[in-house]
Image 1 (cartoon, rainbow, N blue to C red):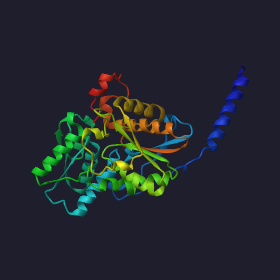
Image 2: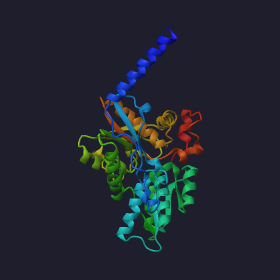
Image 3: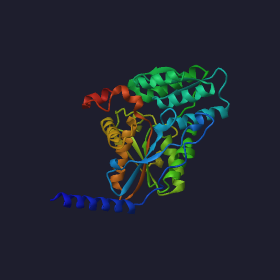
Image 4: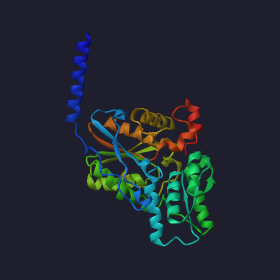
Amino acid sequence: MTAVSEAANATDEAASATEIERLRPHAHEGSGPHGGRYPSIVDAIGHTPLVEIPRLCPNPNVRLYAKLEFLNPTGSVKDRVAKALIEDLERSGRLHPDSIIIEPTSGNTGIALAMIARRKGYRVAVVMPDNVTQERRQLLGLFGAEIIDSPGAKGSNGAVALARYLVQKDDRFVMPDQYGNPANPRAHEETTAEEIIADCPEVDAFVAGLGTGGTLVGVSRRLRRHNPDVRIYAAEPMPGEHVQGLRSLDEGFIPEVFDPSVLDGKFLVTNAESIAALRDLTEREGIFAGVSSGGVIVAAQRVAEQMEHGTIVVLLADGGWKYLSEDIWSRDLASDEVESLNLW
């Protein structure tokens, strides 16, 4: 083939690709409103962008969008929940001058609570597994939180048990309880879901990680009022696998806020799959997200493979900065090394 014919073929292919793209159903495109003007950092929580990640979508007839929750002020979706939890404590009159807000967390909720509490003048203690990454401990310290360690081998379930024990022993402790407080899913119903509808009204499926369950429950309530046919899917870790931010229901603790009936399906993911997917997300789409986001991408890809056509929104709960000390983007991860990583 001559250079001229090669160039002509390339031109034809480019034109065909452009025509195919023009004919595809498009969401509302272009930039949204500017970032906004707010009286404080707490008021700036939310308003996160929705971006398409076509290189990670296995089905050319499906559009895959990512809700970038790591662009919240402390770097995770938990800013929304922490704000709602503290406001709920304030409305209920449970906070007193000597009160200490205490919460079990794998890191993100605690960091968000610590930032908001410092801004509002409250004390915070967090109960967390002793094998969380150092970045999380450092952020908690910067925001003035006291850290109470729970056994890392017991994961977030161990942190929940210890926090509830401490609340019973010391009446200064006030626990907002992200696992049982309706303010958790309500925050997502009133903010996260509303933003998705505004930016992507044609959404056919929503995929998020199964943690407290608040995101899935809250978003599903609002999306189904918008579109009763929308499908809701969860990414759940394989039993025994510690995928940061995700929870296996088979481990014995089901958060009170979680309603399994909201799900149309769930996909089990492994730590290795989650790490591979988040590496792809960084390398192919330029998005630097956390480990649970990798697991959610794996689940969303499986959903896309089952669809004839449509639009999926996937929620990426946090960023990769809190995992840099583990070097999971560049080290050679043999299967036995994956299990030793501090990915909580």
